[in-house]
Length: 228
Length: 228
Image 1 (cartoon, rainbow over the protein chains, first blue to last red):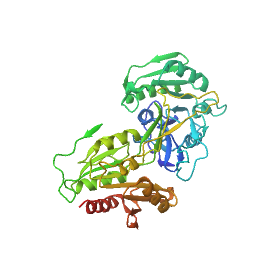
Image 2: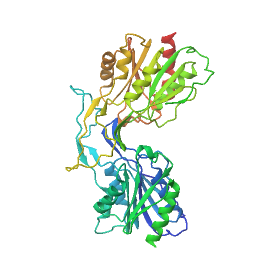
Image 3: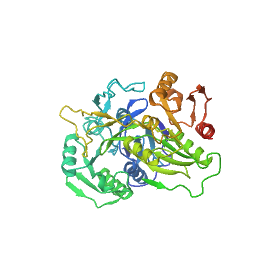
Image 4: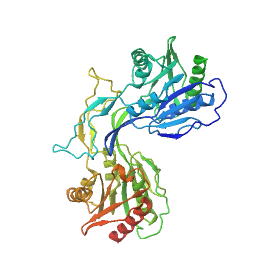
């Protein structure tokens, strides 16, 4: 569902003429009509990135789950709920020069979702079985045709951040990983600041803790340089 | 966690001197630091009820999960995440003249919640086991000491609304049930209107579809009459 069209007049800037897909927010995976499984994500970092890219002139397709923060202006907004819908929206948005996959996508969905509200069973407990969701980052990274020139993934980790994120980059086949520590103690999840490590072919680069807008601006500049 | 105190000057009205606990919103049951199970609830109806009760002079303790709408002014707000926390907050708010349990409380929580982000296991799928949450409506309804004079439950159903809600009233032991049909087709969940059936000792009373504020005002009047 498209709720706002790209503004006719895109901003001028180093990303003028570049089309970039940005995913953001959580996905919601239904259990039944009243229950769902969600990932904690305010959508703040993904939204800031989309805004920063648009401000530098990019044509941004912003594919977002139900986030807490409103989507930025001047981008094409595609609202989705589930990982499957996000996958389809991303595929539909290609071709693109870059993909920035900042959403906190559920790894699994509930199989055999009920269209009636689950009732407590005799022993009082439900049985949920899960199936894997499409892996958006991996699917796009490993496209043989129409792969964006630059694919950026995110790794939200709670322990061994660098090791997990480096392994994720290799496993998915993306170009960069933006890794961060979302342990409750950091205040990053749901907060206004972020402390990320950018992992590229050149290794890992720790950025100082800064506002999510500042992280977004710095990442957008790097993307512009990479696509130049 | 108490985020706003009751305004020193309570409104005048037929509920002056009455203390009422209202629950609202969804609960979030953590799976790990980044995932949780939630119920769909905007908190709109519970918030409207708390506002209507406060406007009629009641001292309202408003126990709310992470809702989409902001809590009303002039009530004591207690923010919780899980059903267990909601149970404790309600118990702490007693004694009260009435309890209105409008929250969409999760029936289950995930057992053995991980404090690390779950990784895909070898076969790619997680195993979640569930345990029952405390039944807030039933616990309060069946208190032998310090039971509020009026206990009002809610039943959000998707089929056989009247039968399910009538059975729920008997099973829980509450005085009234406010039942509604939250099937996706009705637009009630997440919408501004509601169509409820009030089930009391006198039977079932269908109210016409109206705004959630109007439902709240009508229910508050009935509560005032019952407590008079």
